[in-house]
Image (cartoon, rainbow, N blue to C red):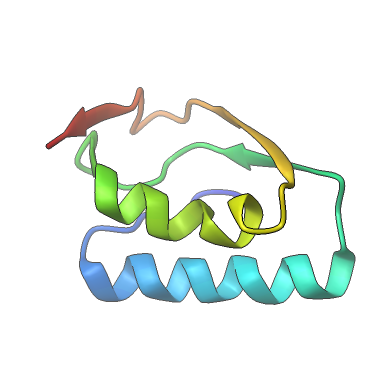
Length: 76
């Protein structure tokens, strides 16, 4: 998964649905999320949890790399 640029709630849901589809088809053991999650350098905790939920509910290991719009500066 790479470069979703989620800047609003709708985009976070779309990215989550896309990840869900990919996970169902590929059945991976591990997923690498390649940065640029959004263009604002701020990722709300609830949106991050929503996005990775297809992985966490299946106990799939995952990790991230930073893109040029990261690092992850979470906001509460």
